Image 1 (cartoon, rainbow, N blue to C red):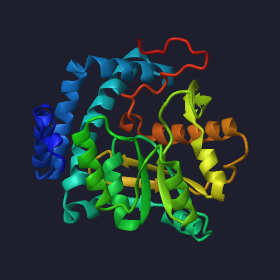
Image 2: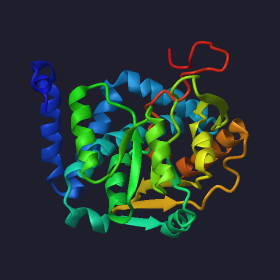
Image 3: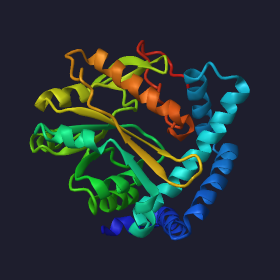
Length: 300
């Protein structure tokens, strides 16, 4: 580890990681309890994130009353805070604890896709259980992932190191040549395609009825080696007894040669998956920050 990571400016980060390690060693129900308490706290003090969540919920669920929207906002912050605890569980939890907690559906779709020998794109979304599910996947599958480099160098060093213990290739999202190489080697690449990274390399397609910048790389990656594209969605069970992972059948029409059509289909599938447990999606991110006409975004 670089000496620079021990600089006093990062001591608070290290202290936070130490606290998460301690929580990850507690009983599962206690960890979820900590997440719920933190979520209630964030609802009160994290005004910026609450505002972003309120805007997203108002845009995407106009059919809900104002009271119902606010309830969903609160439940979203609780689920996202619980996701922090679940991330720690994915990093440090024991196999003995974790393996009985997961139920996975649709593994046969991945097996059939891999038999084509073209590589497989496993399309994911930013559900709150993301890092924990990566740990669960490693029990069943050999796969690579893409990720966005963390702004905090301690977190980057730490998180990437943990992921590399269980995942063969951990690829920064800008290193597309490495992704293409994995697909050529008939590997499966888990790739999240649901966030707004700006207008470059994006098309505009509806997401919950709102025009959203949607990355178009999914179509290009699939076309490169004619790789099947499948969707992975995952949820915490309503009774907090464990987790469910659902793998879809391959999308027959991707790539279609029309990036907007592909993005529209993908966003629709994301929407269907998210609506099953809408509070377990990361609505705390500015999903609609890039507007097609360059106008001011919804959050300012």
